[in-house]
Length: 454
Ligand code: SAH
Figure 1: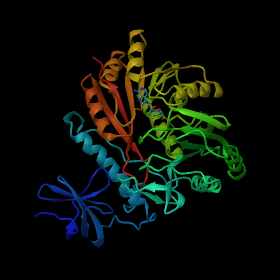
Figure 2: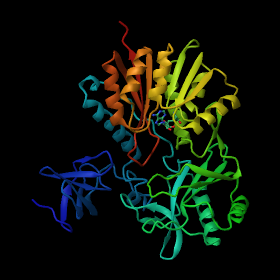
Figure 3: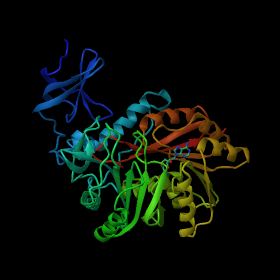
């Protein structure tokens, strides 16, 4: 059967893929349909036909799944911020644990590893502590919102549902201040105009707010007045940054920036420590679940007072400082220099002195540490989505850590890297998914490995 655009078909969904699309295969040819669940019978209109797959849009759910729940955020599925919201939350948690198992099953050595039940949230909405929204002119009006999934068409949005409502509020305040002074919005097609993005970050406990304006150019009219208005209207504002990003790129922030108000940081607390967070630093976006995640890390690490720990990909030192009080020494490494400056400041701020932070690529610094004879008891890694470099794995096993705790935001690279470690005499003991990104398909997971002693 050949599929054509605008065809209307009745189909039964057979699986949900890792991006949250329901899948139906006609022969070997998959049709992807958002807002569907396994076993649902749906009436679908084909909206896009490509060589290797097609996309369909649901016209009607004829036989709904028992796991279906009403949609809360009407636009969230279209923009992709809440693509799983039609799936009952417990089922989302099960789906994520299953996804981890599925990736493990592609390696025989990993196929019977215990994957614990995903730890979810009591209120799985309004969790994000950070928003980055495009600023554009649509039909003559300056708007903030989000792109339609897979496009650069901005849909104006005032309520996001997945982030701290105070952040929603602040976006609108900043938008209206920019409107008041007729500041131009970036136009992607013509690569013209000034403001590209507005970034808001807010401390969950501290309530402190940081505003970053990303602009193509540093000469913005009425800049002083804009900042004065922000100080007047945004409660607990502690930092305003102008970030310059003149390039045609999908990377949001540029390298050059100017501090317009106070300092380039805001603060927040995680478990026992308070952290300074700068605009260029990574910080986990779900503050409630980050504490859960770090407790799992601590539990898996089973610390002893004489332990030497390496925390690779340490960001502003959040995991390092969480573990430091229970061990002899923690070595942290991170590639963003500014994050390491924050990590050092954070150690001092919390009166922790048994930590050493190094700026550099983990794969290079780890090798230097190994060559200088560092003995590691427990290795903690928390790499970005692409996972660990082979050279990192090779260097790390030379120090013969007894335990490795792997924090992963991508089960695919997690499985690949765990398999690598099994080739160097490690066994995987257990894995614990933690839902850091409810209503999305993102899966965060902590794995514990131990060295098989000869
Ligand atoms: N553990 C921290 C940060 C985890 S995010 C936390 O929980 O907050 C991953 C971090 O890895 C980011 O801070 C990123 O800047 C850093 N990173 C990316 N590539 C790296 C590399 N090659 N070497 C060291 N750090 C890297």
